[in-house]
Amino acid sequence: MSFYAIGIGGTSARCVESLIHLCAMGLGPDKLHIIFVDPDEAHGNLNRVKVLISRYLTLKKELNFPEDFRLFKTEITFSRDENNQPIYAWSPVREEKTLSEYFKYHTLSKEYQDLCQLLYTRSELEDLEWDQGFRGRASVGAPVMAGISKQLDKEPWHTLIQNIKTTLGNGYFAKLFIFATIFGATGASGFPTIAKILRDKANEENWGNKGKFKIGGALLLPYFSYNIPPEKQDTIYAHPEHFILNAKTALSHYHFLWREGSPYDAVYLMGERILDAKDRTYAEGGINQENPVHYIELLSALSALDFYFQKHQEGRQRLFSYYAGREVPKEEAKMVNWQDIPLSEKLENEALFFTSLGIAYLSFYLPLIKSEKYEEARDLIPWDADFFRKGQLRLEKAQKILDELASYFYSYLRWVCEFHLSTEQDLRLFNKDVLKNVFSHIKKGEELAGKIDEESFKTILAPEARPYTPLKYGYDELWEEMCRIKETIKKKKEEERLSTVPPGGETGEFATGKLVLLLYKAIKRFCNKNYGLKLEEE
Image (tube, rainbow, N blue to C red; front, side, top):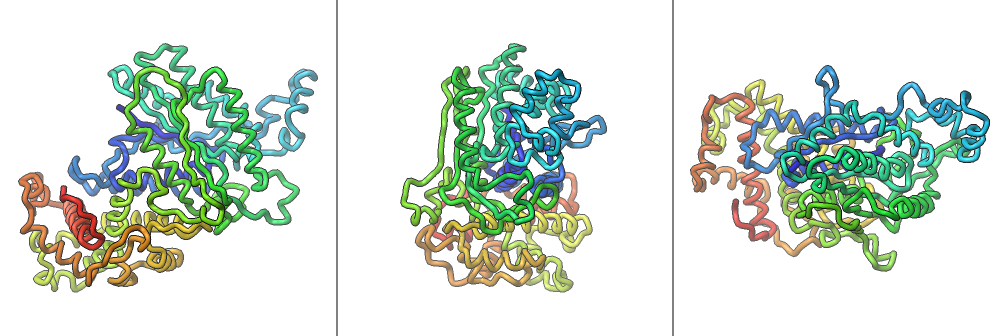
């Protein structure tokens, strides 16, 4: 089985960002091929997720975890160019940057020029350049997205199609998931078009086992807003006050397009009754268009996992539609708890472990290892003597990987803080008082060393999430768990995994990966006791 994700437009980049973090927790598939589609290649959201993926790939390689260890287990791949460089994003922008140039308007007959004028304003034809997106004009993006059908023999589409055909040829399911917003332009124009182009390709070429080619999608309904500066009121831009109308019109259009069948096997719709404007500012595009993550984007990533891991039947069935929402009065709709989150029975514990791991690593263990007195105090650090040679974690190679892991965890904690705090909704997943402290330091670019106290560490889970009585100590209890690991190892395989000198010798990357293994094991034991999880140890 193979898995693919396509993110259309800048908002979908934030959806994929959430999917990457879920993969880092160990919730993703074994392998995932990603393509971004965006005319605005300098989009701030896209650049942010590209940096995140680069860190993920570095850690996936350098930490050298065993195959059966869940963290960072997903292998993320991309199509590559003639120089073997990854192609993160495909842009429809070539030499033509306006509809007039794309249609070669001035060479058309008067009949076709009149048709263009009927469908588009002069500004949409002549003035709207696509290099910063379609500015809320899905009708402008539609003919441009349709041009993908002429690009399928080129990258990144060629590799995507070949990988899908190979999977099908071997008799396995190939599952593609597409992220898009319906109330903008790039997503609304690309969502029906890309799926249809690929489905038509499979039918026209009669791919082997084409009934095992499944396409799902997350279609994001309106959930955020922003204020428009007065000086921009007369320019072409995406109007937040039109988002609801845009979504309604697009859904009606999709219904018409799919009256004889949809290219999708499943579509997940999600949005919010309250359009969230907190911490969201207007930007025309480019690097400045980077907004905080919203919890709706987390839901979209979870919908991808739901689609990937569903047991599908071969052949085309009817279109399955799923939605996430709360049918409660508006004043009650602001509260979001774990029960409102799909797949929460699995996500809650894994997110708790991973968030605790990130905070413990950044605030306590990394500063300890980097301390000049670390080696002098080795006799007081039993877990170091049990599993590492003296100085292993101080090797240059180990230090570089430790720093890369720190960069990743800062990105992860920023993500967690943003979808909790950069919203008018009342999220009750993790403890917002703890996250406010964490976020205050991250926004200032400060390190977390010594900034998150014991009380905060042992109360990361929101008090409303479940009844629990925290242990007396936080970091001290975690330290005790680290020191007890050697004496509690029961499985021979685990003992070999954590042995001081693994086969092939010991270098910095082995030491760093082993540290994460140990700390994660201790974190799970700590959380089990602290939050009363009653989980059996793996």
